[in-house]
Length: 233
Image 1 (cartoon, rainbow, N blue to C red):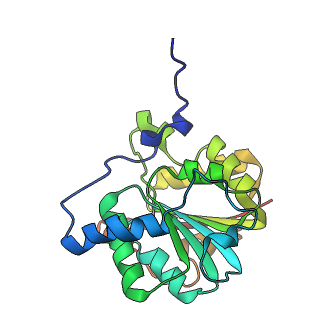
Image 2 (image 1 turned 90 degrees about the vertical axis):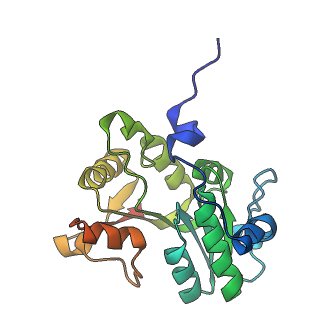
């Protein structure tokens, strides 16, 4: 009998469809040419000095899981040219949008991966990241699907392993149940300290926050967002 796969190890556990409408010619070209150039090669061991995966010198390293259309990732990469960014996004259309912007702007401090983020987390060296961003992840709102939420005990273990001492985990969502879920899981994990001291700390967007299309949609539909910052203990 085949051993059942743990939900945390299943690619389909954390995201849904992989592709939407047909790509435009330029987007398809980016997927065909730029993606192979920027995609992490997980078949090879990660370098001990993770900064070596970038063609330019970088002083800090950050991971964004599920970057959507890439607006936030591109904004951060532009304002922090000495920071290396790894962006993970399995949705082909979103990856195509990001690659187009990276090409237009000539950004050299972004690497990408187009599959399950847990594969990247398991590949990364210990204590190699300064920050992890998980922004507006799929909330899987039905209770029977909550096991598919990316925030879980096993993924928090992954975060804790790859973050440097004092490294940050930033989470944003407009879904109250997911915000509470994340607070409870981080509390129970014990390896992350929530940095909020008053309500404004989690109601105010992160410093330099550019906003995202998901956030704008939530506001139009009358939902407010929470911005949680956790520090590795």
